[in-house]
Length: 263
Image (tube, rainbow, N blue to C red):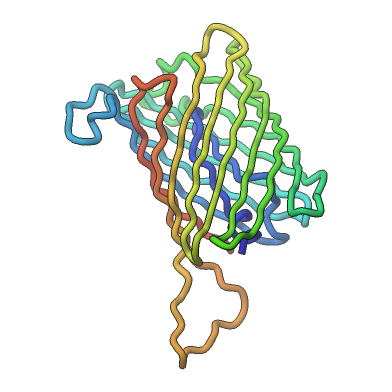
């Protein structure tokens, strides 16, 4: 059960909208598709009916393919539209993750390299022309994860340490992320993700985002007379979560809904 949960792990979106699963590779010849939509409002009180000073809507499509037992390749498309400033951000990117070590206690270490590119200029209407941080980015990451079983359910931890190299003269960033997951019963998964950004310069602000969420996998309910399905079973998983930056509380709160699908 732990292995199946980890293979579908989704960490809530970071500041740039890039999402990365944990250290584990996808199963060979399998495809994971995660579609996520989000809404960010500021201040936080706007969630409860207060007037909103800033609003953003986000959409992301994230795809991973298990090329072999140790190698996973992925693709990402992301858009963010500010309804208050009429500014559009749109990016496409890809990554490669390679398992370099597996321990005897269920732990694993991987290396990941990825890149993303801004594409809002191609979409017309001038919505992305005023963005000061529209630049290509390269991500290099070291990932470590471990899963285990206990009397109260299955759990895992996945951590990442990486360097983001940004074009257009923008500051590089050190990023440290960790996600804790626990499933008390079949179908339910609780997640807590922490995202830290340390800029290597004065252009970007420090960030520490907290992202709790819950995911539910819609396994079929079989009665005593029902036949078990033949072949692989790929149920949908729905994830609901929030993201809040403790160092930048003026950015407000982000609500997210994600759907995971495996093929």
